[in-house]
Length: 365
Image (cartoon, rainbow, N blue to C red; front, side, top):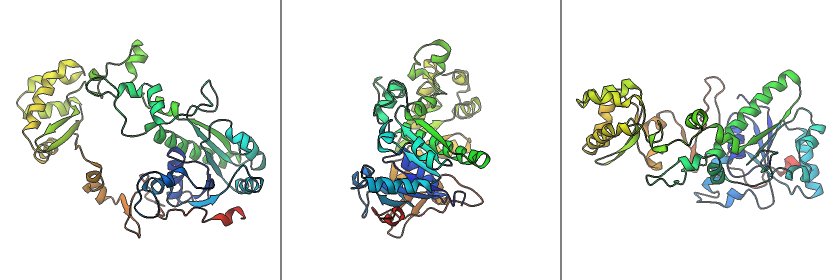
């Protein structure tokens, strides 16, 4: 596998760090999860379908577990020995905590110059909020994402996904892989500073045009991907819902021709409230169709669309089944597979969930 031979020390919990390191484990890295006495917080959060919570195993499969109290001199020394042999360290403490614990980049790199050290935090390692804690919802609020994620009455709706967590994980993964590549040229590691705040704000690139061009807040209900386009929104059918998700002129023309209203096609060239006649036409049409019947028509016309699924329906989707994305372990529990696919050296994820402290011998204790 691509990362066989890479040793990673994972000092993180919740989503960003564990998601990053699990991706590395899926592709062959040895990931050693350093847990405080009592274990990762997510061992105790949410539903269980066996000995472990689903939350914990969804982010920590295929890793090893070592329990260390980094404030205890013996355990601190054990961690330093592990770091001496590591390629990558991932931590997600508040800025300043790692230095107080004596596990910061400068301390570890002085012993192991090849070390790549990735620190993921809410706001980054400096700046006026550098030492402040925050989870995804606060970052969604500060970046404007929550204010643009509006319910029909204009009030913010609770996000269905913690996007700053996943975006910072993926930026962190990209940065670690860049640093591993650069190390083959220089022989030296580096420190990576990932701010969840910046990772989320960077993802507004396609919707922040009105602010950058005209200095104004976008009118969410009028914008291209947030409600202002008839061909980029969901519609109610007789037995469920579907989403149209392609607003290129060729898609609009194809369906409007089918519905014998080609005269409405010019309205779809730009988003905005002038598209309401198209919305009304499509809403009335889909209301009289089952999702299957409407979907068959949309497939025939080669339009972009999707059924509005529940999570159980999403896991049972025929495309997911055909590609084998949902994996089943020996206990019959389901796992989400690796989304990164190589033709050569594909991922070989271990579906084993680490037992707390099962790999304590790695720390010499």
